[in-house]
Image (cartoon, rainbow, N blue to C red; front, top):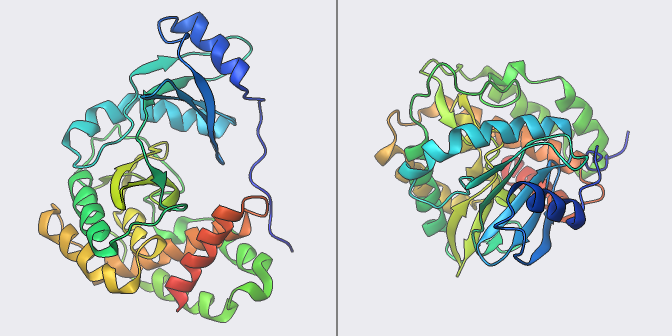
Length: 298
């Protein structure tokens, strides 16, 4: 087996399309300068003027996730201690484009994949406090996600295929042992908590050396907080993880116990393997996957 490319776009998302959608649906914004900002697994982003971002899904799965963000993020944002891109305008299908889309605030800075925080301990405290504020009991109609917030045992068996695809770039035996240990940890027995669902360095904004925002809530869901706590390995060096745990436990409605941290390490492993195995054409994401595997297995 071999590592795979990013998921293919199912529609052609261009600056011209974004401009046509704005003219048709939000003409007050259509005259602002528009320029490409990012092209990720799920969405294409365009900078709109100085303060806004246009976000258009590039595949149907992402369109469903964006609909959750449009529904829930405006209500979550006011109680979070870091800025998040709560949508300020909603778009609908049109101009040959089949899905909903959004306009959200632009959070200045770089992602942590490009510019890691200058002070890992300060970043750990900021993210621990952010997740403690987010991880509160969610309502019964919170978005369901079959891949995030669920028991690790419920995840697809693709983990072992992805490890095989990485070949000798990963210690398969060590990965298997770490995965087995995570699966053996007691499952989450508390209430379903609000989760970001995809908290990796590419969704963490850094400016002036500090963590200044969290983006891309498309996977927002409810369930086991270990899913988000995996960021301890996805971003932070080992020396900063105690500060992260301390900040989280100081403010969380339900502090994380040893079983939760064991599952979080398993989530980090699963995400590191998946990213490394599906980023053959994205060196930044591939590097993030390798760093995560080194953190989990080192």
